[in-house]
Amino acid sequence: MAIPFFNAIRQQHPDDKIFAICKSSVEPIFKNHLAINEIISFQKKDLYGIRANRNSGRSLIAMDLDVFYLLSNTYRSAYLAKKSKTPMRIGYPGQWRTSMLTDVVDRPKEKMHRYKKYLKLLMNQNIDSKSMLNPGIIISKEEKKWARTTLSKLGIHEFIALFPFSVATSRSLPKQKILELLEKTDESIIIFGGKGDKYNGENLVGTSKRSNIHSLAGLYNLRQSMALISQSKGAIASDSGLGHISGNLGIPTVTLFGAGDAAQTRPLGGQTHVINADVHCSPCLKNKCFNRNEPLLCLEEIKPKAVWKILSELGLS
Image (cartoon, rainbow, N blue to C red):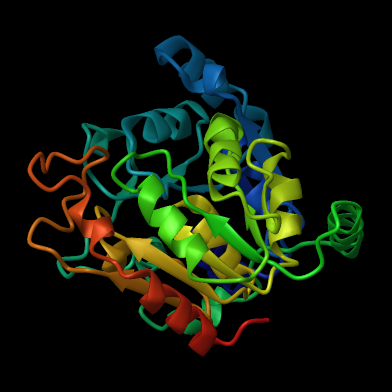
């Protein structure tokens, strides 16, 4: 969701040097991007605690930055920017960080997608937000070749990518719902996820007992997973980062939303679609479901047939 911001600022400043300062976990998203000159990433330990955060901010002083845009709304990010001694620090107020900003931008009163909220930081109403979606994530020719070779070794040629997991349990697809989805197709399926999803991915494969369902969850790093996803003909996603990635890559992607607010955080892309059952308790915006009588009702109410129908209508690659 930050990529449109980088595209916009590159258009406004074609000759300036633009840095992406981020957590190491999302650094792969920005690799090779045409709008970004350099990526500065920090490990979790570099940002945990006042002392570590202060030292990380001070490490940026030598870069002699002119302007620091804060897409993150956290106190931590504002403190980092202040310690970098950047003369202009632009961001939204909140979390006791206003005094650390030099330019405070009023929060939009109307609900909008997060990428548009980022663009508002540029304080330029003439930005065409739709034109900011490209270029998106850049996968190199070498990476695509590696992905094709890897898939060939696994005996996989055409497949649908499945991202059933999320860091929030309220956004992860219930196991039975995943199995129902798998039962409604004969397509080859590859399950993707992080290291913590490895067991659950393997468990799904074992439970389904179909030979054309594979799990690569936890086997490859994010950049490698992105390259593999780029070779898929379509994707079904939970409300998760991988769903954003496939949508950004131009893969036909259907995302199953429940706890989250799709109006603000839906995946971007020309071939994306969100399914939301709009039950009485959604969007709750919680990371854990508190509906004890009807747990995960928002996801349980989504019909597998509808998911496959919409994915087909999007036009499989």
